[in-house]
Amino acid sequence: MTNPDVSPVGFAATDHPRAPLERDRGVLWLMLGAVLVLGGIFGVASFVWQMIDGSSGVTDDAAAQGRIAGLFATQTPPATFYVEVAGPYTVWLDDGGVLDSGTRDNIVAAANCEATFADGTTKTFRGAIQGSSVQIGNMATVGTFDAPVGAAEVECHSERFGRRSDRDQLEKERTFYVTPGSPGVGWLSWVGMFAGIPALILGFMALARGWTGGVRTRKRRTRGSVAPHEM
Image (cartoon, rainbow, N blue to C red):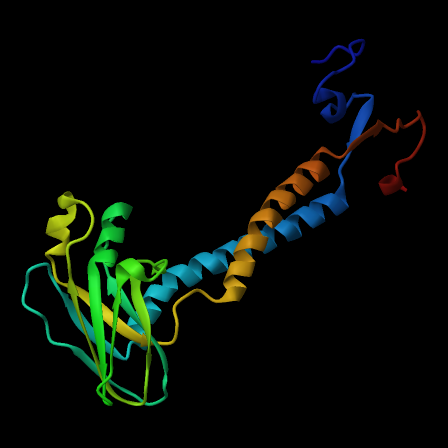
């Protein structure tokens, strides 16, 4: 039971039935906030999905699959494939789900590969000197090379690199894949990511602004007046 002689304050100043003020919700702000939040979620989710789904795309699109010889181990057989259209190819290493980022980087950096082509030319590349490795899920790039038309093969092995504590990881054989094209997530996904985060922030700010709204004097019904819905 409320005291009619006491004026509500705080949230009760607008939400209480006897409050002298009422809150005017900003409908346009709420609509704008909802659009921004939904757009931001879509942009960020698209980028994350591209990153996760990209690892399966590596195996699906692979032209060849091989094994990286472990440290001090005998060289594994090369992965062979046929290049129908000359262009770039990328070697991806499956790290097997290593959680420590430093160990994962050392595994990639220790990978040394050589591509041999039908014309007798070769191309060597190392994970340690590719600039920056592109990582999608468990997959990380070792390097990219340009392949001429014809038969080709790629063989890889691990060499000493990084911390001594990672030596046991470098001694393991790991799977690698050779895929046509250069690595990377599509530019539209990056646009969605960088536009989605600000959209989320601005969207929540707009929702808060709309929900808070403005405050106005509550309209009082005079005795004997009839509400519109009662007419």
